[in-house]
Length: 497
Image (cartoon, rainbow, N blue to C red):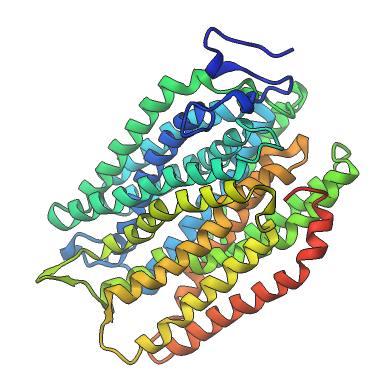
């Protein structure tokens, strides 16, 4: 039977614990709890992107400029490694949700951890504050990211045609925060210093926690469910394994087998191995039936495509951050725009076009392109965007409008892949691995983000054109390959679009 609370618009549920999505139209024609998740993700993205917009500059600017004075190539590789670490930690957040606490609780306490991380960056000096702050933000963001998206999935039935549109609206909230965050932190960084910018990120996260705490009671019961509970007798063993893993990580740094110089490469290997293990565990699980197993196989080429996309897209925080600081004409009517404000261009386009894409998918309904086709188009578009950098090498400074055009293409590519990737992860997920399937999608983002830092180190004077050709043409070729494989992938998806 369905359970009904005092407010039928909020708490109507189906037998499996999801909201009765057909009756839920309280937020832009979507289930009302989407507003709560929209808000917490908006403020989390405000803090995350606000901090990340000034992070590379904080690392490689001189001490006199308020930075840490790191080597520039090392700084961009560390930004990529940090970004990859954020998405890698979704494994931990997903596992804790599926096996111990449930997604809703993990999300709430992860948000608190993120706020503490930004406070550490704002209040603690030098490398100590950087290390503590980034670790807290990375682990907290991993817990929040996978679970927020999965909880959005619980608001809709698998057959609800509004599902992709709902994820696109949710994604618009992400980008509202990503728009305002760099503008505020960048302005504070240039006028008052880096630590004021980090402090603004902490305040933004505190606001997100307050809004979520007020609305969390209206989420469906499935959001609180522990889908695959860890047996009580195994908890001590798992705790000891966790402690041992932490000791090993500390030891690797202590004996300098892992250093700041090779951290990005090490993380990329770890993420790749983790993804292989994850796919193997899911595919071999007795809790996964034949249809679900085929759907997981269908997800593998989408995973690879996602890695390639994020390796280029996330260079907004590595290569493009440096490019904006050194090669971009940021003069606007006699005033030089802060380089960090470039990070807000993509969110502006997302805000403009996310609703258009959502409406387009809704209007097309069952006639919309399949997910593999959307992914293939995404790779083709972002590959073309990188090729546009080539003629700019003949100019002393790249016009701001040209870079904005490149980022517009990247936005179209993003809207064809990122919210669709979140949605397809929930639709292809085996029932016993709902959150962990989302973690797999974020592992693709992790690997791509880490590679964005590794690749950015190859952008060197005299090698610029080769850099753009390799990345742009490589992505286009991969997109064509995915297009050719689309019919076979659709058969494996077993009716899921």
